[in-house]
Image 1 (tube, rainbow, N blue to C red):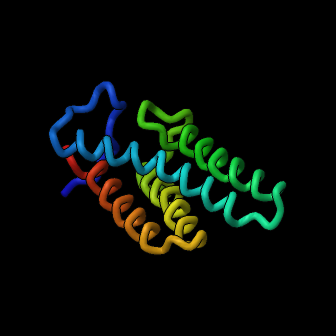
Image 2: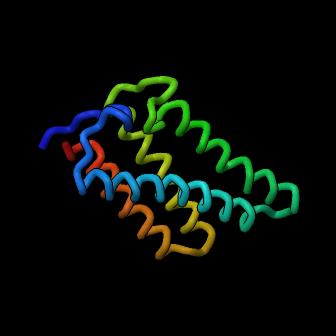
Length: 125
């Protein structure tokens, strides 16, 4: 098994596995934003903190994703190992947010799907 960086979306060789994984990856990215938003609005102790967390946490995750992890080509390219670790760390925040918001089973499912998706993304040719 060889670990390599997938190329830009438009230049990848698509197989049934990578197509399904691409859909899963996109769903996880959207789920990450939804999980952070849900956590923020559920966690804040006042209306202002709920709004700040519910909007700020997803905005921060989306910014990190766009700068370093975007499938179309990130603004800043990281070394491969750092890219994989950052991708897993950002997705883990979604799983942790779900767990902290009282949805531990959903958080666990999210975490497992994230690990599987990242593994397939970097190992499937």
